[in-house]
Length: 333
Image (cartoon, rainbow, N blue to C red; front, side, top):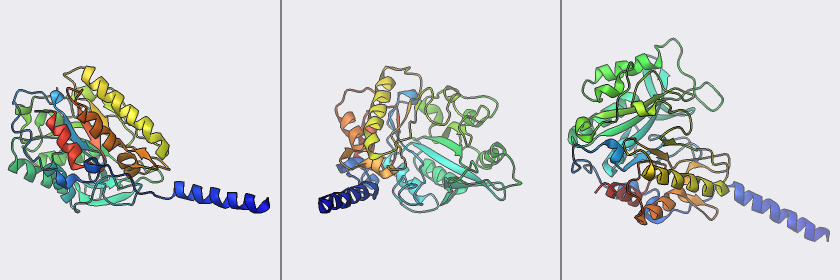
């Protein structure tokens, strides 16, 4: 009897180890980690100039430049440092990006995910955006920009003795006249949702967030005045997915927001974060699947292929696949 119990104990320990050890995600065909198979550098150029950004179906990336730091920090395929990964995403068709910055010495921004520097600076980001939009003037890119450092354990700490985050941001904008759509980067007044023809060749700041959520001043679009850490009006960002077995709940949340996007105010941009993570569910599990749980990305591809939606809104993705990007873009035609 003791031998049976001992054997059972060993089996339970082994099973627990299997559950806790990183597992290969169930990479689902073209939904996951195949960004380079998509090529959509000019997909907006063929759309009517009078179409509102709110009417578009837009593929985006969560923590756009998080390519270093290991399984619990990385959220995107690595196509190179100095924001080369951003260029790869833009060429694939990504049109909303999520950039997180630390205040660095010299009143500059470096790109971080928590405590991990992502081998890129904000100048790298703006250089890549400027080069892409110059080569593809029919496009626009939406930017969610966030002060990353909270000073808490696991986060970063901003350099001391520097200007305020907003003053530093303003200096970057002033150094690149014409890159940003002006009404979106004015701290004293938020902007309405523009039509595509107004913002072609420009970066549109959607929101400028503080390190613990909340919006700085009136930067960005007026519809996002309540964009905080997590979900808010027009934003679904339920990012806490504690274990692989909670991925199903995240799929349901993403689907419910897709449904509300289609029945909601057509004059408002709806931003749906497909990303998530937790202590026992790294980002790549949530995106691609693990432990026999379907990931959000393959689920989304199947949902979009069903053809029952009129628009997807903005889908913010971790490790997007080329097929998923192509399918989102196709909803615009």
